[in-house]
Structures are given as structure tokens and as C-alpha cells.
Length: 113
Image 1 (tube, rainbow, N blue to C red):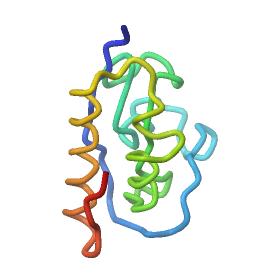
Image 2 (cartoon, rainbow, N blue to C red; image 1 turned 180 degrees about the vertical axis):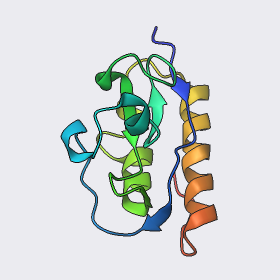
Image 3 (cartoon, one colour; image 1 turned 90 degrees about the horizontal axis):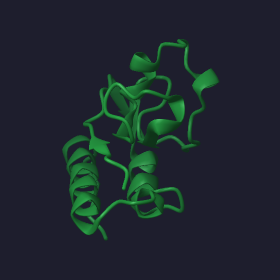
Image 4 (tube, helix red, strand yellow; image 1 turned 120 degrees about the horizontal axis):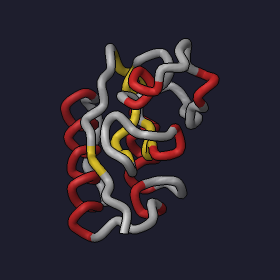
């Protein structure tokens, strides 16, 4: 079983813009450490060993926490439910972090499941 590590992402602002999952080339850096802080989950800890270890991006390359990304990470087709080898407790922890970020940074955020 994969030993995932949950991480509260770093961001400088917020946005409700349309969301597309960023690729490494979308960032102004090749430093994995600078890119990793945009994600909630890593298969190899923070800092991740490989680019592909990062899961559930919620902060865009512009440094903004994205409300639509939070929604996708919580329940989208590439969200927490699609991450392999997460047990129920880990899924609840991640969803709780997502809800907290949404509720703390977006006035009209509503917790949903």
C-alpha cells in the first residue's frame, strides 16, 4: 500500500476561475519543491521524489488557491476517490482539509459530500 502524505498547500491568493489541472511545464520553475506546494497529496512525502508522486492539485501556477480545483479534488473524476490505495480514514482527512480550505477562503463555500 502506498504511504501517502497529506499537505496543506501554500498559496498567495484565491480565485474562482475555471480550473484545468496544471502540468509541470505550466510553472515558471523546474524545481519540484516549488511545484509540490500546489498539491494536497504526495505518494513519497513532501518534498516528493518524483513529479508523478504529486496528487490533487488545488493551487494554480499563478499561486492562487482555486475553488473549482477544491471541488474537483474532493469529488471529481480525478479527485480523492480516484487516488489508489487510500483508506477511508485518509479519504476523510483529505476531504476535511479540502472543506476547511474552501470554508476558510471562499465566503460562499458549502461543505458537501
